[in-house]
Length: 84
Image (tube, rainbow, N blue to C red; front, side, top):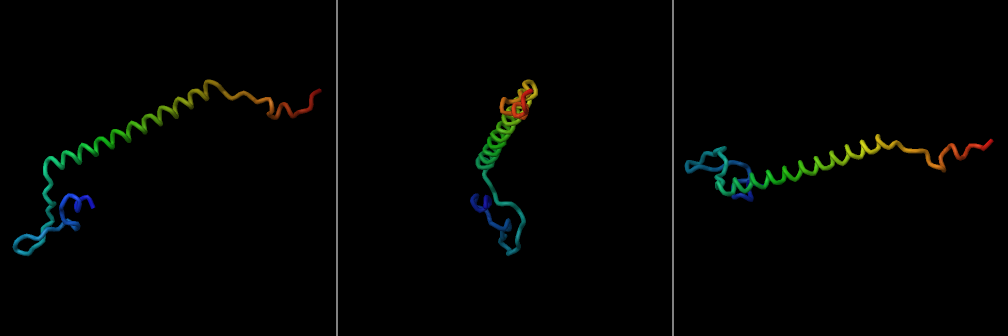
């Protein structure tokens, strides 16, 4: 689909003047190649930033949980036991 959008053949084959098919890629301008690469790098950067933020958030939550263990609530099992 990208190849078609860039003006190339959809099957990756081009016919030469003598009728034989060639497996060479369609020509893409240097500017367009640079744009595609730049966009890809930006998407990778965004993805890595989100993964890193999620990892840091998860690790912070784990550390907070370990630093402050849950205390039994008043409505927990100990309050339902009969008082002597």
